[in-house]
Image 1: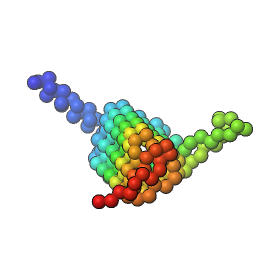
Image 2 (image 1 turned 90 degrees about the horizontal axis):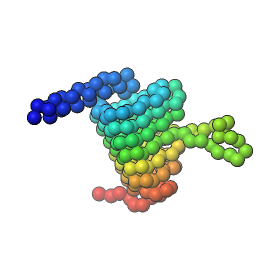
Image 3 (image 1 turned 120 degrees about the vertical axis):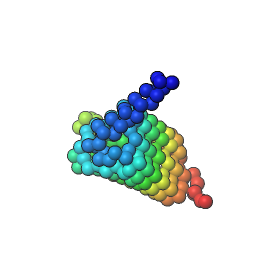
Length: 181
């Protein structure tokens, strides 16, 4: 009984410690941060809304001092999510991102005439609306625009525009159905 009590107290202290050490990056204490959060680069203009939950093993990369990561309120980044920003990623309110999803606003260009090392990256901003559920292991590609009230099925690859009030799934993600009450 005493051991369980001490274990709970230690968990509470480690949770509070994580919120404090990551405060300079997130600029809010109204955020729950899991274990092994990796922030790479750290440069840029970032804004994170209140009541955000970040589970274990999340990676947030910022590759550019002018890059922007903007989150609304009440968002969840589940286990192992990778958020890689070069230019701009905007995520609205009430967005839940499933385990091992990857959101990247840049990708490599490829040509048989140029080595990967010397080719320029393709960079396009990503916009995700409000009340969006992104399924497990989904890849959000550069230039993706996801509307409000959208469900993205697990293991999907999202390129281009996803309309409001719809469900998308597949590789590439395609419209599966309209969501109605």
